[in-house]
Amino acid sequence: MATFTATKANAGNTAFHHDLAGIEHTIYSSYTMTAAPAANDVYQMLRVPANARITAVTLKSTDIDTGGSPSIVLDVGDTGDTDRLIDGATIGQAGGTSSALVSSTGQFYQYTSETVISVLVQAGPATGAAGTLELAVSYVLQ
Image (cartoon, rainbow, N blue to C red; front, side, top):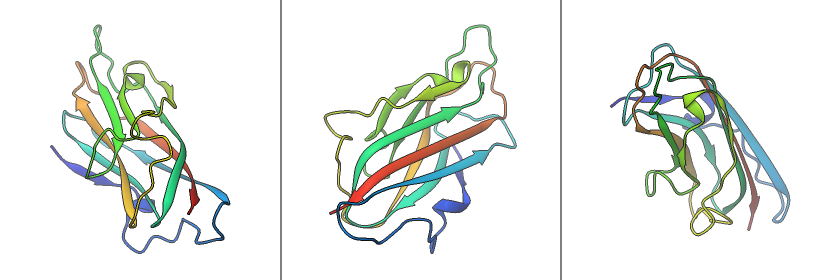
């Protein structure tokens, strides 16, 4: 297991907005892997501000599992719940996009403090390949 950090996840990041309540914002981040992902790798992608209520999440991946029977599974969440926002995305098996928010815990979830949103490799690849992860998180401030 290793942890990788995209620029927008670094402490002191100013990519998010502290505007008036109710205005929707979207933060986008990407991470280009220099090596194949492995099970339990964490890709810290971006930070959301305190009082951010999540309205949408989109995860995109290139083909990072080139095996004949690909097995990689990705989650999107935070340190308190690694699959709070997206659970069990298989998009890394051939490349693609997922915006399947976990409705019971992720939809309209409100963070009370500034929080890093990460992609977790829940299940490792059959044949891993370096690639790119992209993440967009939309929120409103409460």
